[in-house]
Length: 373
Length: 233
Image (tube, helix red, strand yellow):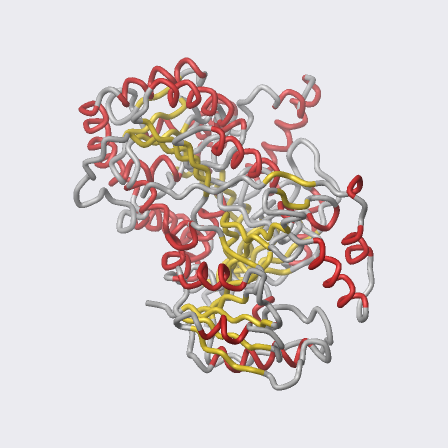
């Protein structure tokens, strides 16, 4: 007998065509979150944008899709309403991003913030005037206000919300992201390789710093014959993946591929330096935590939740701003400084122990038991 | 270790790609179940010359009568080897070299039950593949590798042609992994093979995709094949 029925509303767990599978951090978060709810004996169903197809998030947990009819100010009122109507037999709801709780939310519901997402320059094209910005703020306030709790994966979002609307402070819970420490741990012995391997383990989007990284790596590969560059992650489109394959082909010691999540620990253990050069829209990145847990030297953008994980110069390097110049300087320092790599990596590994999957589940369980009682 | 079995229908493949396809497969599968559809050339001898090949022969050709019967027969012979995973492959298809490195890890997991690959139709040679219209390999994926579940009932659609390479139950929404490993399809490399396949299919099927086989060169868009790199770890 299930403890209750939980409906989860997201925008995209897979591509809206129901075919292209996305292997990003939010999707992996969704899978672990679903496993946790199932472990807690909830009956779980997901909804997202799509043409009406049904898939599964994990075996036995359906993912239904409903068409998106309107979207404005990053809210999806028609999706919200369709969820409200189709999920009428659920007992509890989870809005997988906060704005999905607009304009209405189930009484016993939780919204999740995966980090600040309005901190990149093109955001102004979405809310170009003060009138637009006022409408976005009004909708977001309504979306934050409706669920019983808002769980944020980083403190940057919490600080922004509490500074803007102090009255919402009691609603906010901090549950930082996780790393599975049983899977992500340093190798028994580091290989005595002459080569130095740099890894970019992200989805290949502009906001994740792909453009600056490619230019920086072109320069560094030419300057340091011992350097290898591994670009590991899916693109934002099929054709970008072709272009990345071509780019890697044209540059010696550059590799482009991706791996299923269960093989990523092996990938990290075979690297020396990991780049998380996000420019914006970042939470407490799963990739960053995984790289840290494996004891790698991390170079990260000084943005969003990454500052909850890394103290510049202590357990990694933070870049502000993320440019070709700052990337080249940081990577050069690590390529030519094996002791710096080792020190940063050891402290990163110790830091990651505070972000274990079990701790994440425990923090989440406390929130769920209060809201879904 | 999970057992990976390849299943492959063949007919009159001598002088084409069968040897290199079998060589490629032996780099990562445990055995290869082949159903020879009454070849009249040296195909059975070629098959027998390779280790770990389990060859069966039809006395009369089935493909031209009913592909679904051929596929179902091959399926029965394949599952008799008690595989953990099955790779459904044709005699003119090869996964790129990295599959040798990655196959054990690809199937040695419980996160997903099937794997999809991008399939590249090489055209007029081995340097370029076709990308116009329905030939675009970047936008479509082929499910060729899947977990076999002994207790599961597997069925095939009653279709004389294009009944699919895997059973219906393996086409359902299953936890899927979309691999970056690419499949090289060599069936359209030689113009004479393309013409022969076109004539064969045209007897039982029509449609714009089939007609595009005969497109004049100015209508065909090709892209150069980007050679894959073996990973250094």
